[in-house]
Length: 598
Ligand SMILES: Cc1ncc(COP(=O)(O)O)c(C=O)c1O
Image (cartoon, rainbow, N blue to C red; front, side, top):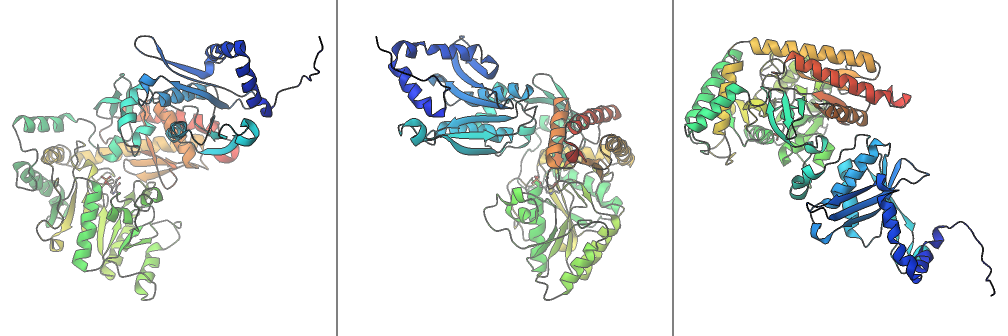
C-alpha cells in the first residue's frame, strides 16, 4: 500500500468550506455530527438556552460560545425555533435570556454572523441590540469568494456592545407587549417588569415585588397612586352614574372643579379674573392651545422658547421643544420659534435677558417680533435647570417692553411640585397664560388646561376643538385633590420639608461619591443629581431599579438622575430610596476608570 504524503497543520479560516464538503462526503461523520449538538447541550450549555413547551418538547434552542481570545464576548452561532412556535418572539426571548445570563458572568459584547440574504436573523439581532441599547458594527467575516467557493453568501460579522452587567431579560412575562405594542414605547425599557398595583409612593409587580416610585408617572402622581380620598370621590361619582364624557357640555363635575379651582387656587393668588380653557387631555395640547391663542391675539407667528425646554411632541409644541431626539421624529420643518438661551445657559455671569433684549431691539437682528415667550420656571426634561426669581422678573419685564405674552409652562413643575401650587409663586410675576396638566387631575387621569388672562380669551366657539376636552372623571378627582390638599398651606409646607430632606440626602451622596463631579440640581421636590455623563446616570438608575427604586434620568445627555417622587411620600420611604441611590452611586462610580469618575 502506498501512502500519499500529507502535511499535518493547524486549520485556518480558508479550510472551513472544504471541511464542510469533506464531512458531507464522509457519511458516518455526517451522521455523527449530531455529536456537535450533544456538545452544545453539555460543554456549551453555559452559553446555550433550550425552550420547552408545556408537553416537555424542545421547541427552541440558542447556542453560542465565548471565544477564548475574547472572553467578554458571546458569539451566537445557532438559533433554532420549531415551526409551531414561529412569530411568537421566542428567538428574541432566548437571545435576551442568554445575554442576561452571560452578562452576569462578565460578557459585555454580543456577536454573530448573518448572511445578507437572511433578513429574519438580521431583524432578530437588530431588535436585541435595540432592546439592550447597544450599537452594532458590521464587517464581512467570511466572504463568498474566499470562504464559500462562491456557493454561499458572505457571512457578515455583527458585533454590538458594550451592554450593562445588569442587562435584563425581558422574557416570557413581556411577550404580549413585545408582540403587540409599537416599538415607540419607552419607559418600559428601563423598567422591564409588569406592574399590577400601586399605592402612595409604591409600585408592586404582578410577582409581588415592591418598588419605591421616584418617577410618579413622570410627575403625574403628585398625590401618589390611588390616594384614598380621590379614589373614593371617583368611585362615588361612577357609582352614581355621573357623566363620564359629555364633550364640553356643562356638567356638575365641571361646575364643581371650576368653582373649587377658582376659590382655592386662583383667588388666593390674586388671579381671580383668570379664565380656564380645557384642552385635549395632554400637556402638549394645552401648549398647542396657548401658542395658537398667543398668535391669534397678537397676529404674529414667532414665539421665543428656550434651550433645553420641553413642551411636548405634537408639531407646534415640538417646535418649541429643544430635544433633538424628539424633534428628529417630526418629519417636517419645525418653524415659527426663535430659540434663546435659558437662565444660566452660558453660566451665571452671562446676561441672557440682556442678550435677548438686544436682539429684539435690533431691527436687523433677524428675529421676527414674537407673539409670546414660553418658558418653564424649572426645566423638567431639560435637566432640572432652575430660573431665579430675578431672571423671571427680568423676563416678564422684557415681555412687557416688547409687547410679548408670557406663557409659563407649568405642566411638570406645577400642582405643588416646587412647594407652591404654581412654580412661579413668590417670584412677583403675572404670566399671561399658564399651561397645566400631569398632576392636575391628581389621580393620573388625563387632563389639561390653559389658565389665561380674561382679555386674551378671543377664541371663537370651538376654534381650538377636541373631543376629549374636559374629562369629567378628572374634574372629580381634581376637585377632591384641591379640597384635600390646598385648603391651607400645610401641604405646601410639607412639600418644602420633604424636598429639603431629599436635597440633604442628595448632598450627602454628592459629598461621599464625587464632590467634584456630581452636583444637586432643582428645587422643591423636583430634584436630581447631575452625573459626569448620561451613561453613568443610566447605570445608576439601572442599579437602583435592581434594588427596588424606580427612577429615571433627564437632561440633554440624560446625565441627571432625577427624583420626581409623589409629594405624599413618607420620610421613611425617602430615606430608604436615598439609601438605594447611595449604593447605586457607590457601585457605579467605584467601577469607573478614574478619568470618567472625576
Ligand atoms: C413642561 C412640559 N410641558 C409639556 C409636556 C408635554 O406633556 P404631555 O406629555 O402630556 O403631552 C411635558 C411633558 O413632560 C412637560 O414636562
